[in-house]
Image 1 (cartoon, one colour):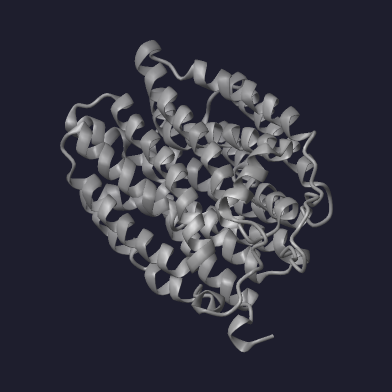
Image 2: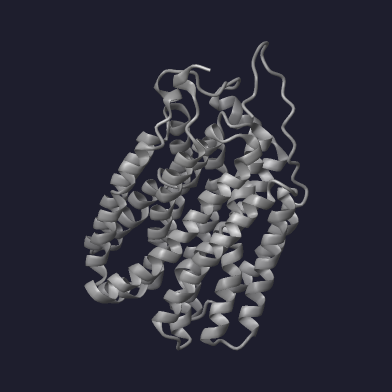
Length: 409
C-alpha cells in the first residue's frame, strides 16, 4: 500500500472524532434550557422557540446530505472546519436575535448547517473508511457514546453558565468553545483525499443514491430513524418546561438531561458492541419498543424528582443507542464508499422526525395547554418503529459491478 493511502489510526480517528461530537452534540443538547429565558425575554410563545429548533433540525438534515457528499469526496477536515465557524456565528446570532425571523435564521438555519458538518454523518464516514468491518460497529458506538458524554458534561455546564452569566453571555461562551473543533478536525485529515487512492467507487453518487432509496431495508431504516428523531428531540427540548410546569425545579431538568447523557454513554457503547455479535435490526426493535414502555410508565407513575431521574436513566440507555446499529447496517449493506452521504439521507429522515417532535410539542402545548398528546404520539411511534425494523435485511446488497471493480468492505 502506498504510504499516502495508509488509513488513519483508530486511536486518532476516535480521539479527534469523538471529541468533535462531544462538543457539537453537547452544545446542542442543552438548547432546551434556553426556552423559557428567551421566550420570557422577548415575550414570544413557546411555538416560536420550538419552530426555530424545528428548522434547525430540518436544516441539519438537509445540509447533512451535502456535507456527507463533500466529506466523501474531499475529506472531513474542510467540512468540520466550516461547521465549527458556522456554529460560532449561529450561537452569537442566537444571542442577538430580537425578532422571530432572525432567531429562526441564526438558531435554525446557521446552527443546523453547522451541526450537519460536525456530527455523526461526517464523523462516521471517516470511521467507515479507516476502521475495518470487524471493529466498525464498536468504533461507531464509541463515537456515539462521546456525543452522550457531551450531553452529560455540557448540559449542567450550560445551566451553570446561564445561572451565573445570563443566557446571552452563556451563548457567547459556547460560541468560543465551538471553535475548538477546528484544531481537532486537523486530526481527521485523510491522506487519501489529498490525491492518493480513495475507497473504490464503482458507483456514481446518483447510482448509489438510486440503489439505496429503492432498497426496502434502507426505507425501513429511514422510517425507524424518523421515530428516533421525533422522540429524542421532543424530550430533549420540551421536558425542562414540562417538568417546570408540573412544579419541579429547573435543577431537576438539568440533572435529568445530564443523566440521559451519562447513561447514554453506556447505552450507545453497548449497542455498538452488541452490533458486532447479534443482528442489529433486533437491537433497534428492542430500543424502540422499550422507549414506548418507558414513556408509558413515566406518564402513569407519580411525578417526583426520583421518578424523573429513573426515567432519564432508562431513556439515556436508549437515547442515541440507535445510531451505531443504524449506521453500521447501512455500511454493511452498501459498503463505505458513499457512507457519509447515505448516512446523511438516513439522518435526514431522523431530522424530519425531529422537526415534527419539537414543533408539535410547542404547537400542541399552545393549543391545549398540555404536552400529553405529544407524549401519546411518541408512545405509538415507538411501537411502530419496533415493528418496522424487524424485516430489515442486513446482508450486503447483491450488485453487478464493472469488470475489475470491488466494493469497499
